[in-house]
Amino acid sequence: MGFLDGIFERKVCDICGQKCGILGGTKLKDGRLDKSCTEKLSPLIGYLKNYTVEDIKEHLAYREENMEQIRNFNVTHMLGGDGSKLYIDIDNRRFFVSGTDSWRSMNPDIISFDQIVEGDLNIVEDKREIKKKDEEGKEVSYNPKRYEYKYNFNVKITVNSKWFNSVNVKVNRSTIDGFDGDAYEDAYLYSEAICEVVNLMKDGSNEEIVEAIEYFKNRIAAPRRSYDVTYYADTKALRKGIEYYKQRDPRKAHYKF
Ligand SMILES: [Zn+2]
Image (tube, rainbow, N blue to C red; front, side):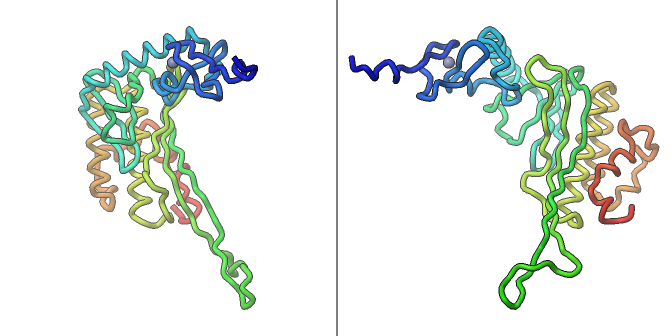
């Protein structure tokens, strides 16, 4: 045995006993995990150094149970644009969020309606100045200054869970250019729909939830006629209310609503 052998001795995973990578795997409060065990964890789980080996054993049992439930998950309703969607099983009052049609292989965490604390709309605006080149090839501002805007639409769902605090629905797949096109309007309507339906799932009846999903789907299919519909004409029916959504729409800084 050379004297360097001890230094290169691999640490062992405290769950499965397999050797960890040369960097020593993922550290827990009182142990470590190899790559294959780390990959089985929920992508939503918090900072791993806060968990003990015993916690992770319990978490992996939960994940296996979740996978079993996902195999038998009956999607009765789907809501979302080209990014992540809500996959809802209304009969069993539960849902999950996924950005892919092949969600069965991804083991997304199933959340029951009674775990929902709140859904919050968050539209992130990225503002950048557009410059031009002067005669000497130097970048200078236009007068008045010009900007380009890019957007990402999110609904953050806060939940009660032993393993995570929230799940984010990233509504649009690729970043949206500008606030005056169809892509913005579609993503906005989907975001509003997801936020509203999530807040309704928290305490609404199955009939109310299904009615809201149908309403929003019709509205999205015909956005230019959005003010003709009557179902939510009484804004008291909205869990968050029209003002809430207006305040979170970055277009309010660009247009007069
Ligand atoms: Zn392991």
